[in-house]
Image (cartoon, rainbow, N blue to C red; front, side, top):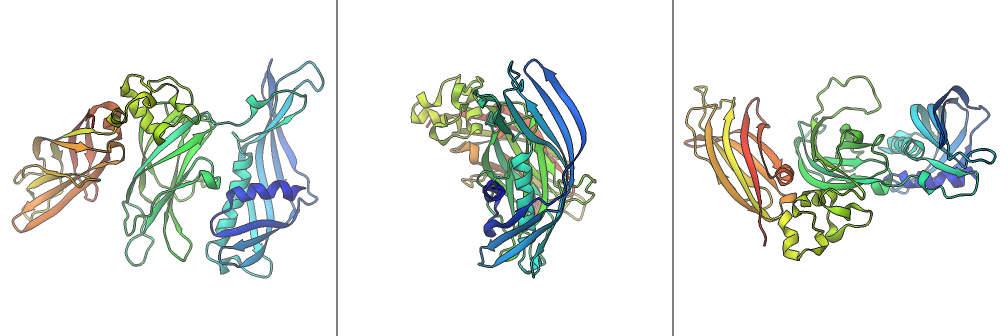
Length: 471
């Protein structure tokens, strides 16, 4: 019976390297869990919430039948299991008949420790690269995500309708994975080939993966992903960046998390996150592993903030992401489904005006300690280019020049800004940056000062303005 309950859960988290993952033996042993603490968190007219701290150093007998995508089958024993966590019990609603509550809801509120070891029966997990890590991650994800709050199990005690107690989506998180910077190079020849994995819950069909950027330590993705949110108070977005290794196991370059409770519904949050080695390790990571740049918008289902009921579950006309819906805020509350095809394009087609104001503290490239800088602006999708004039012998140049670009797909385009030193027989690189158009679409226009990438120093000051334009 236990195998029948647990195997479907493992299947949801089975990684791509495994073709199947089943149990040949599963018993929990003879050691009972210890209850080391009991707390009444909340007691009111509508229910009682109790928390139990549980410690279990068990002697289970667990053997997994593992079959890899390469056709290799191995029996793997799970040993030395040690678990400490806090379980939440909710007795709700209170009723007049015994046992005085209508349903019992339980969940793992906090996982404090989960340790175990893996051993191949008659072999070694290291014989197949990535196998041990894949199985360990699968077990951890299955245990944590299937039990950890806000996931909960509802057991009816008294007949009734308890759907309001069950886990259900309350909103959508729209994520733009913009870029990463200064990643660690794991390759002996050339540079890492990074890709990103993003999820709120690590269930296989809810994990998103970016494209791989070959031979690049500061990759630009500019990709959109959308995630269901069940509990904004406790859930977080996880981002992991890997180096694609081909035949060998892909290597983790760094990871980061965003607490969803820090997001204001309907508001764009532009965030740069420092990457760390391990999200479980609470010690500070002193090594610089680079950073990842995200743009986030959280939208609650059914909220009325200029785009009406379009955020209701299932109401996603024309394949729009929630980010596109937020950017349609300027449509004066009209439903996009009521607009003509040309009118729908207003929110993504228009004119981007870029004023290159000045730069400061540029890095010198000439022997005399000066440079002759100019700026090249490029729209990534169309490769349309504009160039400022050259300012001679100046590391703090002022241009105050404005350029207009007709943009056909603003949500998915980027502005590339490059600073160059003009020389008689060529040019020298003085820094660059990549900007999405999300903020200018959201705000209409804004001023910004941006640090230049790829150089020791320097920042550039720009003014961006968006003018919607019908087809």
